[in-house]
Image (tube, rainbow, N blue to C red; front, side):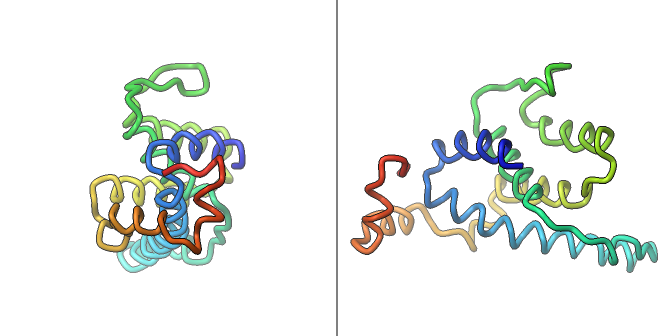
Length: 158
């Protein structure tokens, strides 16, 4: 997960900036968990499928899938290699990873990864614009004197 976060996160952070990336991760943690719980509950209500209600899910991989959706859709590269085996369009890349990783490691959280893809897709299409800070507010934050310790670091991206 750390290697994926490093690869996806650094590319996305260069496109959106450090503060926006931070807010994306923080909201991603909350939103992927909320969708995971909501889907589990719906499966129970609609199909009396209790298994998901009692399954534990801990980790950051849902957020990584969220970031993957954002990064692949904001990146100009239109094709992606899936583990060097075949090429898929960048928009389909997170979906291909979801399916292939489930076959390679069947014990991983399919629903957790799916929740991340859903959150990333909803965020990409503006569904969360009302809860994310606006670009003007981010610019204002970057100029706050109390945050100069962070914003003046060489790795900070505006």
